[in-house]
Amino acid sequence: MAFSVSSRLLHLHRVIRPAIVSHTNASRVGPQALVASRLMSSAPSYNFVTVEKRGEGDCVGLVTLNRPKALNALCDGLMKEVDQIMIEMDNDPGVAAVVLTGSEKAFAAGADIKEMQNKNFVDCYLYNFLEGWDGITKIKKPVIAAVNGYALGGGCELAMMCDIILAGEKARFGQPEIVLGTIPGAGGTQRLTRAIGKSRAMQMCITGDPITAQQAKDWGLVSSVHPPDQLVAEAVKIGERIGQHSKLIVAICKESVNNAFELSLKQGLTVEKKLFYTTFATNDRKEGMTAFVEKRKAKFSDS
Ligand code: CO8
Image (spheres, rainbow, N blue to C red):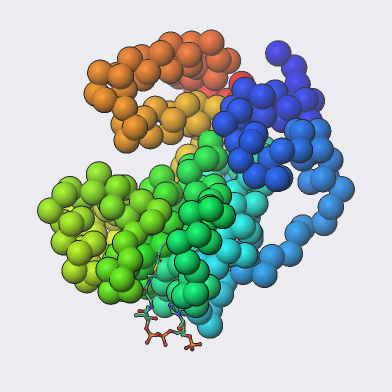
């Protein structure tokens, strides 16, 4: 099927991204408006993050948390920007994967304690504190966290919202909320427990003591550990590798892996089988297998 760029984008938007449509103001506008705003506006500027394209064909979006004086503490403004950028990246047909990183000293030292200090229960409960801070988990494209330095509290939780975590040798992962008289509020007791097991997660959450990058690797929280100055390049390489595949099939695969966190084994296997069947409705499944048989490189069309 022949598509113009914008009609292909509309098609992808309809097919791949229904889950995002209601979760932020930006995603409430229609796909035409998203296309138009991207074409018409110059690159938006952000206060707490920088955004670049890296890798072959600029296929990897690099988002760098940039609030150095507060060690990238996660204030509401920063999280709104991250959420907005993730939607932009998801809608950008040139982007295959996103790398999220911080500085060499801090990926993020947690939610902003100064912003939280005077909140009360009503502020949190009635006005939905942290609502919308999980935008990363809602996008279809893979997000790779490249964690140097501190990933504490909300910082560790932010990394765990990503699909793959790489660590710099000096990274420290921790859930120190207990020291502040509170508990993790965005996945620290849940995603961490699924990632490293109950005993280790319990220890981290109720002692508040951080673990090293090597421990995080040994315990299965991160995929690999790298010298700090090579970390982002290693993450971009993974993004480039993902970029060689069909974006459509990558999105389906990501959805299936993520189901392992949500469903029973039986339910997960059933959904996996259905998603596997679904790939047989795509041009890219046909092209991938045909290319193998014809001993040539597949040319995917993300359709
Ligand atoms: N919030 C606000 N400001 C912070 C934070 C933070 N989490 N972390 C550091 N800062 C600020 C410091 O106040 C300081 O600012 P200033 O110069 O104005 O005093 C500046 O960053 C530098 O910090 P330090 O001087 O403390 O730097 P050190 O190198 O001595 O220490 C540490 C680094 C060990 C990281 C230390 O700063 C620290 O312990 N920070 C707090 C870590 C923490 O407790 N994090 C958990 C916060 S609670 C939380 O995250 C709840 C999660 C809710 C969900 C989030 C969803 C994504």
